[in-house]
Image (cartoon, rainbow, N blue to C red; front, side, top):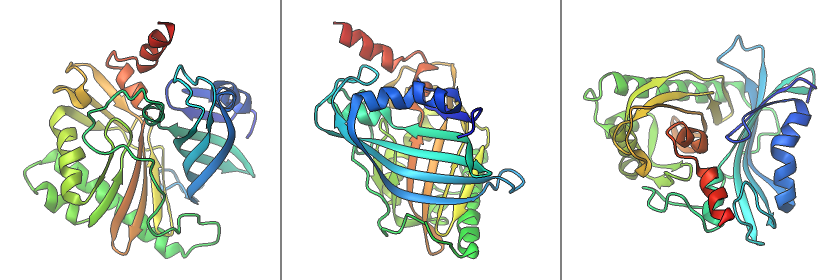
Length: 304
């Protein structure tokens, strides 16, 4: 990393400067709490950022940080057993060094593994989530540029379909909207608090339906990075979405407070449609903006 590299992490790590800032905020506490850590990478690729002038190169890495959970981490109680922290990491590379990072990790997912799950009634499933069904997610070799172009075009088309549905929800049924861009046996590897779901119909039932019913005035703020290589693509925003929890989303009390979602999506394309999607949301930040401080709840519990 360059000394002044910009490092973004989910709450409570937030924005830091340089390797020292990133180490102090995240890596030192994490590596103090976890021993024998492995980075178990399932997806890796790199490409030009389509959001900018295509002059910047970003990498995307996704998988789990696995270790023995031996000491408290953010007041999450240790288990002295294997724990797997879901992560997605984006790095912008310039002259052989990292100049910008976004590291998302699923802290609610780790809490559930430790027996202190915050959302036991989530609409979809809690799973330690595997990598691609196709087992071809580590793109260390050169890829056919045309394949990345196809993946990016499909992701852009899918984003356009969401925008169109928000503008006119009655133009297409949810099934009609999704069947244009997704395989019927799609897998949506969602973040804890929502969970993972399988097939278009169950995705609508277990995620899309509640999301659109309970959250109002959704505004898309755009992405900072959107890339694709081969049959894989990804994006993140800071934040991607601003919205209002008017009807009790995730069981949180309704309010008129505007809240932000910082989101990562990683995709696998199979042929002409999307097959798998891994999602990370900075849930603790989203909840804290609504007055729900999950980390303070843990601290209060630890204090007795």
